[in-house]
Image (cartoon, rainbow, N blue to C red; front, side):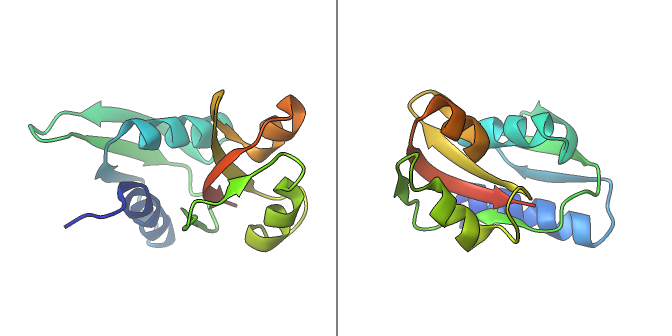
Length: 128
């Protein structure tokens, strides 16, 4: 039984990366799709495609083996754009290394874009 599909997706990606696989299959949702698009734009994953399995579907993801760690952030903290740096220090190993992925009123974006747009939102995931 799944409770947090995003956490299941990110742990599947992390486990596949650490075991040296070229691809993995994860559950699908619109939030997961937006997170995967953000990861793809920053070259953490290669490509992904939606596979309809009759239920809710799943994503087949091709990996680049460039992820050290990734995970869902729980609870999903509400963060103003002035507070992003505090959470960078908490979840990322070094300044300028890795991404915090946020769900904002402008969509799912990384923390750097949120700072530029001066918009806050909910923290969803981290990756480095």
